[in-house]
Image 1: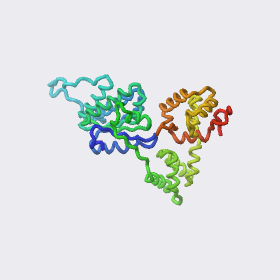
Image 2: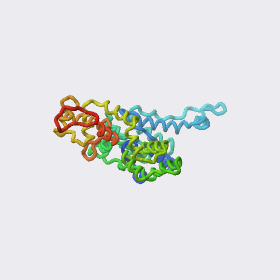
Image 3: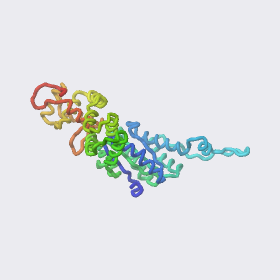
Length: 358
């Protein structure tokens, strides 16, 4: 796809922990090497406030690998000879140094890396939605679009995003620098083939037992198709020698390891935002009159529509909430389920109970 549409990146969307980064490193990178590309990976969360610096850092690392190979023999081969039999040669003409300004440096690094390596660069930008919240995000996006368009002979790109809101803001907002620039594809979830591998592992440890694929598929769907989580569940089943998927799932989501993390995330938020998450976890409209009254009682302060909007915006920017199809929802389904079964919000009766454990 990349080779058939020069200058147009591919943007892969999926929630967090689905396997996008694993795919870039373990599937796409080897294929790129075989095809003759030079893959360069940059995690834009490495420097959320300065994502272009993170990209430039990755390009400079790749340039170092090309110009200064690992190993003594490689380094010797790349060392220029300045004298032979007593005859001293002059210094080889050098191009001017790379620009200091990040946007210009990005362009210069692409050109230099492609020329030095003799390969077309495959630039893999992980978590590109970080550009949506960067202070100079629009300027950075304009620079990335300009370079990828103007240098399409030297470079092609794959983006990943784990926030549907932020990715839409970048790629689908009319007037945005990257409007309709990339082809957005839904990153596919792993399927029964992966689950069968896990079942095979269980059966290798317990030859006389097996795991029901239907039950395991339902559990995989419930936890949001997260490969590492379902692997942890099956490993625990294997350790205990039990093929009971439902029991293992209940133990996993109620275990101290999970609940401690969810509690830490929940109680790190201000009271109004805690109450707001409880309301959303129970399917309440956040700005309805009854909900506002309940939020005021639960948080101990007067909650207005403007305060709710500000809180929703903060939670979205923090990645706690998303807004697919115009409805606010808690991004992590397991976190949402934990809140809904742990906390109640009295929103109709008019009593003064705050958040309480069920």
